[in-house]
Amino acid sequence: MLPLDIFIFTNTCMLVQMKDWQVAGVSLLLILLPVLPALADNFPAFLGASIVGFGIAVYFFWTYKPWANKDNAVVSLYFTGIFSFGLALAVFLVLPLHPRPYGIVSIVESVPFFISFYFATKTIWRGLFKRDILYLADGYFAFVLTILIGAIIGRFLHNFYELIVLYTGFLTMGFILMFYFRK
Image (cartoon, rainbow, N blue to C red; front, top):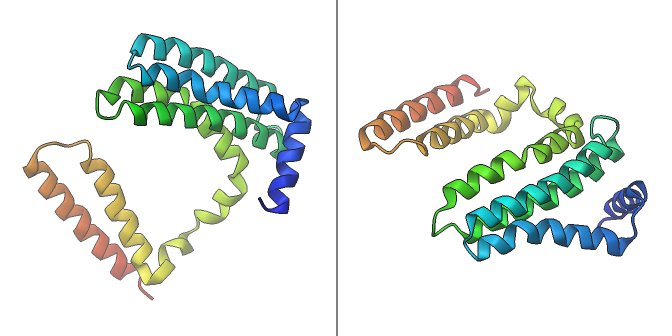
């Protein structure tokens, strides 16, 4: 860990007013609540256990309101992130069986993590979304971003003829953007 990371984590534990073993225990609980029912491939148990974990994560989210200041955002990000990690691990464990219902529950219960992540990193986002970023690597970043958006949209289509039109269109748009943002 970097010295800054140690400082942030130490301050995080001080903000929560918890001892290290308590933080570790809550973290382990937040990971195991969704994972254990997923190992057993029991969706009703997963739903019940993940709702309990969601309640714990929302408690920390609401107690340390991430929009208040940076330290609170880090505390909220830590606990909601640990719970989201447990949800992602649970979805990974049931991936070969039937991940769709597990994934839907996981995405909905990860909303506090996304909010905490935004508030913890909002100073970075302001600098990232400038028009100059599209000129990065002589327009290649705009090309890759366009192809990535097309690939994400194409992931939800299953017809070959729809996919070929979509991918060709996004590839063409990517090349046009690359040439437009080339210096």
